[in-house]
Image (tube, rainbow, N blue to C red; front, side):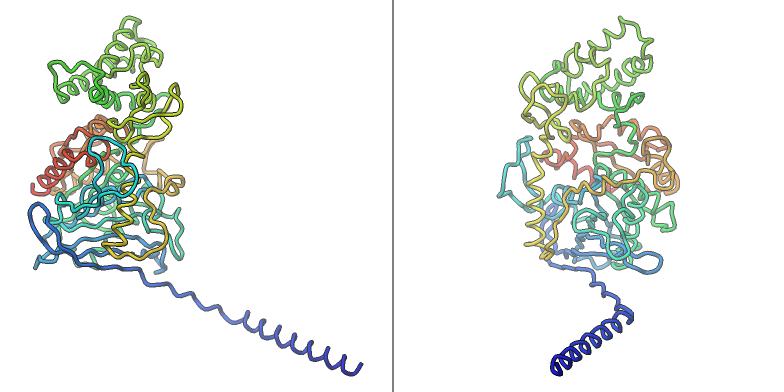
Length: 502
């Protein structure tokens, strides 16, 4: 019994000491977790662009954003290309480049237009298939003329919220613009480029971001004046592209694109016309008789209704009866399924040149966008291969090419500065032009783009207080990513070079 008593006493003593030690540890203040330094990867390269051989530095890595307390909130991943043989780069332009989504990384403009390497995919609207893909030198790059910074907003690429930040703090029209504006400010500080000419270039929602950025950079506390903006496949007023009852604007916006698609697929009469002259005729009809017919609604006479349906059929290639059944209002998705239905195909949204085969031939819309799955795997493989092998980026987490997460949580209005149900940032462009005499705008449009139709852009820029004498409109016989069509890429870059030199 004596030994049992001593053993129990010993056990109790050990337990008591252990408990006391743990309690003491819990009372000590917890050590703050150290935040790792931003990742950074730098490499040296040579290349020939526009016939000029040069050396350049590629800097890939993170920039930390902080809140007012100095706490980290986000890590913005970017890739910068700086030409090395410029003795004084204070007057050398800097392009800040991003895509859209919202939720898209900068991969498309990076590997398709501006970057020193690009992925070569079929130029004739054929599917990209499977690897291996061709990653080639990009002589079209404008690196001979400008330095470039490719930005991935929070939730895209390798960029993410960290520390005290949350993704939702950045996912909104104004919240997004504020974070990208802060990144630009920090980049200018780090690289001592405050006095360099500054350009923005965005694609799709990236043009919405660019307009919001103009307001944030020039109209906010940042006071960074912008020299020019290249808007690729622009959408600033979302009323032009949102099919909702009572909103006839999209039917007007999309009709010339339907006509262009009908032209491309041989469904309209081309005799004695060029594509451009044909579309000028369609524009006049759309702004005149068609817009008037939609506005009249039930007041439109039966005779006029029948005449409008017949002309819609002639201009687009869809049947007259189809337009009659749709009350003269055929949406973009319905048209993409209808135009080649009897041939067993649907056509692409991003690029109407592409054709797809669906499981169901009588549905209202395609199974998937053939101009999306026709290019995305090549861009994904090329970007990841390039990051690892050329830029020596060593990051194991997924590079988010096109993430749906930001879009699902996106807030349109921010502080309530947008009216009605639709985001419209176009007035920011008008204001920025009025308050900066050197600002100029280029708007690049693909004729076969069913995502951001060219006629919607024309209508948007001709309203909203924008001085169109300072806006260059350019057009290409391709789609949303007009640069996947190599002749259009060639012309696009020539137009961008001309725009910069003005």
